[in-house]
Amino acid sequence: MKIIVTDEVAQEGLALLAQDPRVELDVKLGLKKEELLAIIGDYDVIITRSGTTVNRELLDAGKKLRLVARAGVGIDNVDVDYASSRGVIVVNAPFGNTNSAAEHAMALLLSFCRNVTRANGSLKSGEWKRAPFTGYELKGKTAGVIGLGKVGGRVATRLKAFECDVLACDPYIAVKRAHDLGVKLVSHDEIYKNCDIITVHTPLTDETRNMIGERELAMMKDGVIIVNAARGGIIEEAALLKYLESGKVAGAAVDVFSEEPPKSEYLKKLIGHERVVVTPHLGANTFEAQVNVAVDVSREILNYLDDQPLENAVNIPRFDLALMDQMRPFLNLMNTLCEFGIQLLDANISKIVFGFSGSIAHYDCTPLTVCGLASILNRMVDQDVNMVNASLIAEGMGIVVEESKTTHADAFSNLITIVVEGEGGKRRTISGTLFEGLPRIVRLRDYSMDFAPEEHMLLLHYADRPGMIGKIGTIMGQHEINIASMNLGRSEKKGEAMVILSLDSAVPPQVLEEVRAATDATFIKAIHMPGARCSRSCGCTA
Ligand SMILES: NC(=O)C1=CN([C@@H]2O[C@H](COP(=O)(O)OP(=O)(O)OC[C@H]3O[C@@H](n4cnc5c(N)ncnc54)[C@H](O)[C@@H]3O)[C@@H](O)[C@H]2O)C=CC1
Ligand SMILES: O=C(O)CCC(=O)C(=O)O
Image 1 (cartoon, protein in one colour):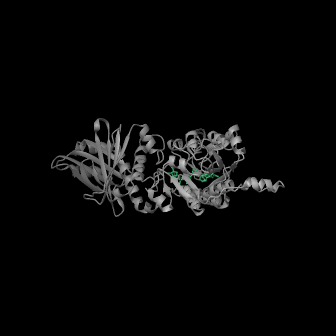
Image 2 (cartoon, protein in one colour; image 1 turned 60 degrees about the vertical axis):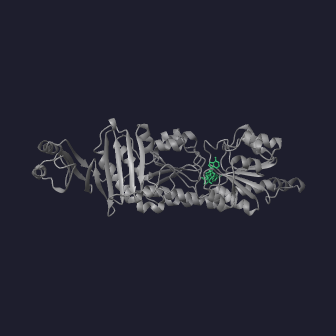
Image 3 (cartoon, helix red, strand yellow; image 1 turned 180 degrees about the vertical axis):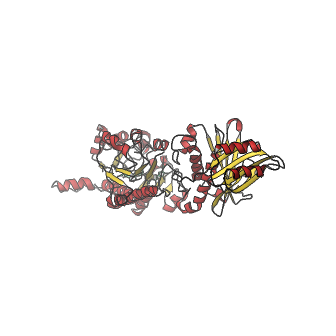
């Protein structure tokens, strides 16, 4: 596996990769865009921080790319949707720099409040001035935290330690989290109207881009202090500059910019403003955080190499790691059902329903569904389908994918059923369960069956009448094909019968024809389950 590292990433993490004989590691910092485009095609993995933009152009040029590893939290420098459509996994390191970022937000806030940077510059230039550097205390202020996630939660705790009244706003967290942190959950507007200090800790998304602009700044208290150590672009910088100049905003502390490094005039003006404290995106720049994130992404790349589940893939549905051992046999079952079922399908699938019944339905089954979908689509399209791009490819093909769940169990304590609908509403059903941890198919079309799928199988339908099994056995014997087991299902007495044979070797086409002729089979198909290793990054052992 060839890995390129394009931003500064701690040695402690890279060493884990460098010592693995399967890995060839190239650290190439400071490449110009064209230089990176020219060489990215040689690499399977790219490791970045926020300094490299992984956009369509780079992903298209990276023909071999299988994984983008972002040594940090924010993935706004990666076109995750496009990476997904190309089946490229994106992983990040969502925890390693949380504390670093929270402490940096506090450092910026305190620097502004106590004029640390200005007084530092003044004293170093030989002055001894005190009155111009009179500052503000945090004690007794109302502080508003927007985004009460990992960083925001830590900032809230630290603001409380400084005896602030903390309000928070985050539409996506449980109210209990705010209770646990001892902060009051309010609306965005209540934050803008009531807070002396406002600090943002949301990701940059379509929803949060320019979330704080003219309207919101106008609503704020006179003398408000604003902190942004999350992402440039969440606060409209031109509007912030305007309100700093008008005096409504007492000061701002900013670590992140919509353009990094900042080049435009208004950004230079904002950075140069005397009541603004700035740092060049240093929130994650502690020795501790850099080791943490480097080790985290390197471990994730090794997980990928070892076919282990990825803990921090942002574009793969996955199980809770604690559930992985329990779920692995179900992933294997799903894979087996799909591999078997797809060989019996007609063309033009319009809908696939993945059904889960019994105790499995208590869990999030999305990873199973997506694993199954990838398995089916892999047999249908040229493109390599994995858990990253399966849903997008299905959507592009006009295939509706649904999931149904019931915790009610009939004959089986757990059952996975896949129903595939084709042209004119024609439906095909296959159900399977686990017996002693191994897959068994227990329903095929309308027939109850019970067999463990084997590498070589023969499936046929014919009008049920005496003597058919003998005929099939004789033909197999004449061609030296050993029958390992046989399963017979039928809809009614002397109705239609379905036979499934497990065989020690493959059935050549002329033998298939002989059986068809001898039994007047209405359907006959040799099935091959090669036992190929699953390449869908789901962590199953199939
Ligand atoms: N300056 C730096 O070097 C660093 C910056 N960061 C940035 O800090 C930010 C927060 O990171 P984490 O806490 O790790 O992320 P997180 O995902 O744990 O938390 C983000 C929170 O924002 C909330 N949120 C989303 N949209 C919102 C909205 N419209 N209004 C209010 N809340 C909203 C989410 O529900 C979530 O709870 C991210 O932008 C991240 O990229 C993180 C680490 C270092
Ligand atoms: O890699 C960096 O230094 C930036 C860290 C950051 O902004 C993040 O992790 O979101």
